[in-house]
Each structure stands twice: as C-alpha cells, then as structure tokens.
Length: 264
Ligand SMILES: [Zn+2]
Ligand SMILES: [Zn+2]
Image (cartoon, rainbow, N blue to C red; front, top):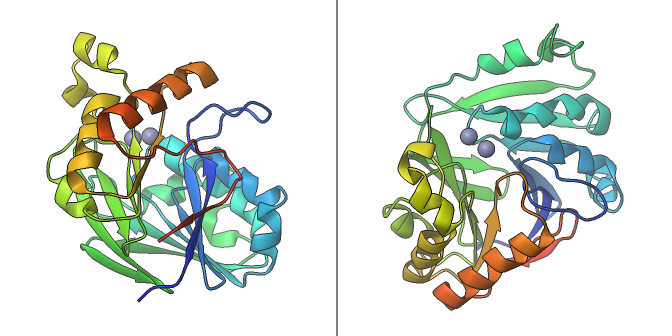
C-alpha cells in the first residue's frame, strides 16, 4: 500500500490571479520524496514559499517528462537555481512511447538557448530514458502509456492516487488506464464549441465534454482540468469546471498553483 500523496500544482496552463500563468509542472510529495511531473515554467514556483520549504528538506529530486514540447520542458532551466542542493534525475520518454529522444534535452539546455550545458550543472544531474509501461521512482510506482498527440506524449498513472493525462485527444483507452484513481488530471484545451469548429482529433487536444464523460465512465474519484488554451480568464475556467461537474457528476477541483491537495 502506498502512503499519503500530496500534489502541488506548480504550472497548470491555467489562470492565476496574482502570479500570471505558468506552463505545465506538478509536484508530488510522499514520505519526503519529491517527484515532478513535467517541467514547464511552473518549476519556478519551487523557489517560492511555501513550496520552497518542501524542496529545501530534500536531498534528491526526480522529474518525469511526458514529452518534449517546450511548455513541458523549458522549466528544466530553473533547476540549477532552485535545486542545486539536490541530486536530480530526469526521466525522459523514448520511442516507442514518443517520437522525440532524451538527447534532445542536451540541445535545448545548452548555448545559445541556455548558458549552462546540462552536463555542467552545479549539482549531480542525470537523464534516464524510459520506454516501457512501468516505472518505479522512489516510493512512486508509475504506469506509462503512449497517447495521441503530434510527436507523441505519455499518460502517467501514479499508483491509485492520481493519473496525469495531458496533451492528447480524448482516447477511449484512457478509461481503463485511469480507472479508479482518486484524482484524474486531464487536459481540457478546447471548449465543446471550439471542438465542433476545429478538428479536435487533429489538434491532439481534448474538449471538456468528452473529458467529463471519460472521467465518469472510468470511475475516478475527482477530476481536475489542466492545460487550458491561452486566453481563458477565471470566469471561463469556472464555466468549464461547472460544465464538467454537471456532465460527470464528479467533484471538479479548482487547482490553484502553489496550493497543495491531498490525493490517494
Ligand atoms: Zn502542452
Ligand atoms: Zn504537447
């Protein structure tokens, strides 16, 4: 049995009244172990209180990436600033899960994009490829599956506590993958109206209605919508949540960046 897990949304592509929008990153904490899901600009919040205090106590930090689009990896550049006291391991997806390769990180985190090459960071840092369906990182047992997204992306399930399903069109096979988790984090890039006007499947993104249906059928405990399209304000996001709640019959959490949620 796994212990209590705490989720701190750091970057949700959502609306954040006082601090601006940050791109995708979520911190999981269990028994003092820390795991980041994705590393968008939300990683910067690791340097802000009260999240900074959690990181100050840690000797190591694991990061698992879902794919290589910049809104999921650009925040790796903050790690030499906020996690220089940690041993850092970056778990990076490899084919057949995605088309991109872990070596790509070395090209992004190097001049001219970044002054400090990945191999010369002030703390021990390792990039470890993963390509299978199971992954064990400290106390976290993860399952991984390939999703429908340009270039590929990986859906992640962490024990029975939570599933993180972003950068994908709605996929019926996700239902079995996430079945029974306490909290499903699922992307909702599109409104239903936008999905009717645009080709949702080709965009590699999901519309809120089908996401709500999926969550209900999968029997998850709670749903949270993440990875919103730029331009949504607080009112628009509240409307999306209300619609998802009505259609799924589930509690739909309003995630606030930096505010912890207990899961599992
Ligand atoms: Zn994305
Ligand atoms: Zn993407």
